[in-house]
Length: 275
Length: 313
Image: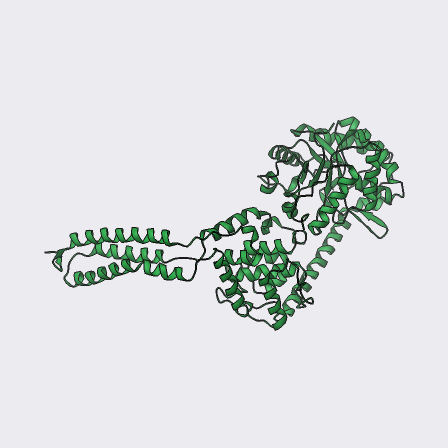
């Protein structure tokens, strides 16, 4: 199913020196919009499969896809010799306004039509397969007709895309909807996963926010452990997008993820591990 | 007749140039042969201020130490110094401890002082330590360089005298004049030395390549890399690295993007961290942050109007 396997990490220039010391890292993901005309030197030096991860395509936009953005995604994929590219099941612009955030699309058949049309256009402009990611939503649209699982399964069925399963987002949505994360996870089309994200978040004002700047909560790791115990196996990566902790904490987090997923640790030989 | 001292001008300048070229070859050969190149240790064993000293002199060494101290949380931009440094913590090398001790002793954070001047003996000791380990040429080297050029200088003086006689006698002197100027340039070049050995230049180059991820253009997360690498960044990538680590500290310490200030190298002012400057910087940063949050919130209110229809979870 997937070209990826093992433990990966979201490559960010801010922590490139730490990532460079990880032994046995299986793959990286890089924010597609951050890649210029040449691949970052320290990313290229890793010689790892690298997935460009788009954040601004706005697959859920009713007004259609900006083909220049698709072209850029294709360019980055070619530049990095990527096995696939990924984007979010979300919209970030509408009516000429940029939200600056990933916003959830209504889980309706109408929205599915829009998404399927945009994804098909995107796929036709890409040299590699496309995978789409479930996002964390702080609200539901009142006209939702489908559950998360039904919505994603239908989208995959119509377009042939694979899924970037963000386990932390499953947890976030379940928590905010007062549902059981494990039950919610099982309802997703887990047989069509390209790879998984795991990231940190925090609770503010009674809502769980998928911040990517906090540690991965123990509950998310337990969800991963539970999934692993039930036979779930997929390439998996840590996403951290800011407020970087001391390297030792970051490495501990990677170890905890590897342990929860039953994978080999990749942190043994860094200069921080030896301290 | 074109003779001066009984020697025709064209014969003299040809002989003169040949002699000059011969002496130049000998001087270059002596410089290469006599240059001290003791075996240096691995560059990895160099501390951040040592690397800073090799890369940019004492001001860079001090910037590296300040970066270590700031990233370790040992000093703040508001002038507070946190207690004492842990005795056996290898994060703090001897020079960095000296910088810290000087900050504690003089309370320079509250009263601009020239940190470079204050640390004169410590930077000398640091340089001597690096000299002993083969990264700097010893003091005798500059004397050797001077002695090495004495034959050329003597030849140049003979040329000048001959020029004077030639001009006085109305003889052609253009070729000789060119030769004398050439000797003067050669002497200047032969005496140039930044004091670093080949080992030092190699260490800086290798370390710069190995630590390219610490360049400010990579926006390195110093909190993740830790104090030592923050210090290495300041050492290798000049003041712009310290500006990233703590703009207020760099500003207050008079450290510029090219690493100037803070040190005695250029004799520039090296005041360190007036609390008021730091406090102003923090206030300004807070204000910028507040305005940014306000703009984002306003924009979100405008652009997220569909959310008004949504059912909040």
